Length: 248
Image 1 (cartoon, rainbow, N blue to C red):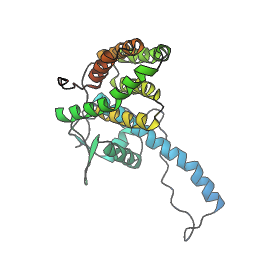
Image 2: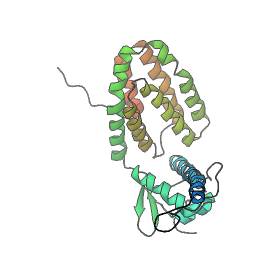
Image 3: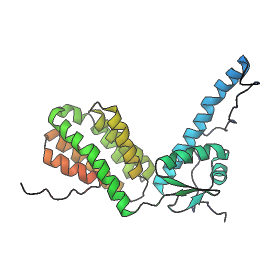
Image 4: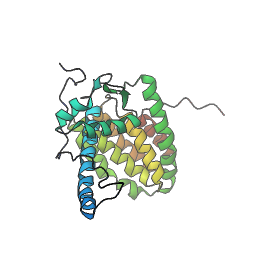
């Protein structure tokens, strides 16, 4: 068996299109013709589309466990599975390396990062530090009707979780939390919290159905304005167990 291949086949990206070669700078000494500019403009979106599709497919494979922690995967091998060249695979893997999901192995490819219990606990704490204080603030000011408007998203996440597709549930879970935090009006917070949540989702584990059920419990606490319940449920949902409060 070829070294670096996963034990199970990685699904091809949806509606993948053949990769276009990276367009160089046409012409001599940096000059280019009008036709060359038009040709570059037509090629660029398709190239980025392939890279984006491969990145999405790799993210789904990481969450589902098709890409095994500790295993090394080469760009050409994965490109063959996806039906594209190695270039968009390497580009996507470089992005995943920035996100902490894989590690570069010189002259071999990329190793899927293994998360220790300490790593997961640290990520859970960061998530809680970002999300819980914001939810507590919003619980004091956002009317109940706004929280109830998010119930359809919680129901969608629950239905996806019941279907058993971990990768699809990870997306639905992020969408629900994004909708919660968008009520803060802080786009930077939404982006950073979403990135931390994505990093926490790389490791397979837990019960998606139970996790999705916590969305409803959290919404109930937010509607009721029960700050103690909001803090407890949100922290537990992030996977964080805060230390006991000190006596005054």
